[in-house]
Length: 71
Image (cartoon, rainbow, N blue to C red):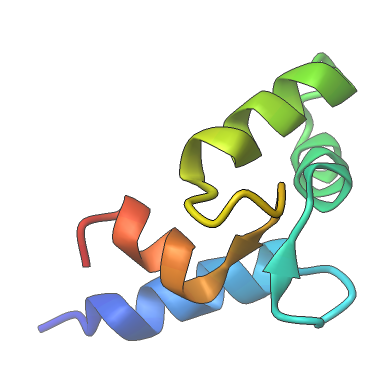
């Protein structure tokens, strides 16, 4: 059985490049580019972050990330 919370944490940590516990649009865009998608603009990355961000700080905490996955 897969521990979904642990899997979510692992994905979150991959995108949290600086390890501060917050995902930014810049971190998201950087990782996506490393994975081969070079077409993500700064605005598109921020728009994605903003859809997950529930406290309005324009960043995504692990709790927000986990909630966006329904966990």
